[in-house]
Amino acid sequence: MLSINQSTDQLINLLTTLADSSLIMSQRLSEWTGHGPALEQDIAMTNIALDYLGQARHFYQYIAALKMDGSTEDSIAYLRDAHQYRNHLLVELPNGDWGQTILKIFLFAAFQKPLYEQLQQGKDEHLAAIAEKSLKEVNYHLSWSSDWVIRLGDGTQESKERMVKAIDYVWDYTGELFELISVEPIAINYDLIMQAWFDTLEKIFDKATLLIPSRKPYQTGGLKGNHTEHLGFVLAEMQWLQRVYPNSEW
Amino acid sequence: MNIETSTYNQPGAGIENIWKILEAVSDPEIPVLSILDLGIVRNVTIKGDFFAKDDGYDVVTITITPTYSGCPAMDMITVNIRMALLEHGYKNIQIKTVLSPAWTTDWMTESGKVKLAAYGIAPPAFKIAACNSMESDDQMAIQCPHCKSYRTEMISRFGSTACKALFKCHDCSEPFDYFKCH
Image (tube, rainbow over all chains, first blue to last red; front, top):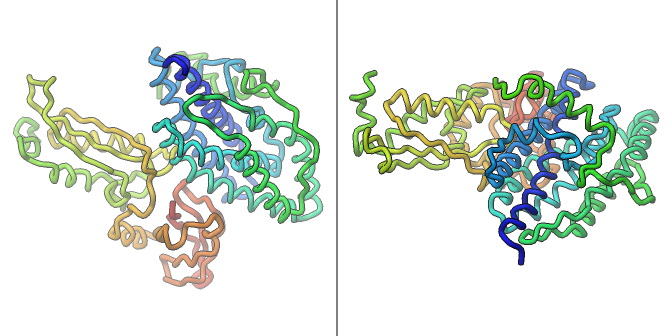
């Protein structure tokens, strides 16, 4: 049995990974604003980025309430350095081309879906509520990105080559998604999540005539604060205003 | 309006008055819809405030739920609710946000759906009938709000806001927004 403080720390730990991954995903996807291949898809990408931002805000607001140390959603997002971020490495990777960005969303949404399905059944009511709310959005992201994976994978020779290249680049960062974050009262079954993730991949990759790599993904470190060189650049852009003009509001 | 004599804030003025005020608060993105049409107001309560004996104003608590997690209209809606109530003489206003049960388009009122269609946005299909499977959206027959044809096709799952998808009509050739079921 853990003390109340220990279990709160564990919960904050889990929430921080959920929040940071959503926020960095949002920040990355928003880079596409004004650069999408067609207006409709540009808008789609922006909408998905907005969903991720909203989810991140709900998690950060909850963290701030649990910490009771004067933290706010803004201070947590804007005033931590890269080594204090706990997001998965996958989400901080550069967008690359449209196919690579789509693939990142697809792989991440296919992971979030079974994770949030479990969390919405979990004992922590507030986290369950955020998961229930987010799940509706994640389902949409998954179906949108699945359509694109199929369209590009089973598309032209060039679109296929690009998808194969993207899979090769991103694949090694996917194993980290299933690393255990232990929170005693909320037992997350990562085996079930990984199984559901694989099932989704098999189904969609099969339609897309793409192959799931056979090698074991090896990249890790994000959950401990050991990030790729890319995160610092993302944060520099995102945090610049608050760092230069502290406490500014608009 | 003279706030001190506002009839709305007399003891016993009742919850109905507050609902009436909320009826006039519209969605900033879709101004034809009130926040009641959208179904985002979940609860309204009034109770005496023991800590504010000096003014004797009751505490009005409005509970709302967001449509989408990142909907930028929510912050503005919160401000607009507060403004509307202040204008009618209410002083102690609390606006609470709940996430569960998650908002669904099934909470949209029938009159809201009629207003949407008249505004040129196809209203959401019923969730139970059409939204259960992940792939359902593109197979659904969505009626064109302009010419009423069902020969329509989805162009993009995401439209001008997170809550809408983009369609086009094969009969009148007009593009239109569809308020997707959620």
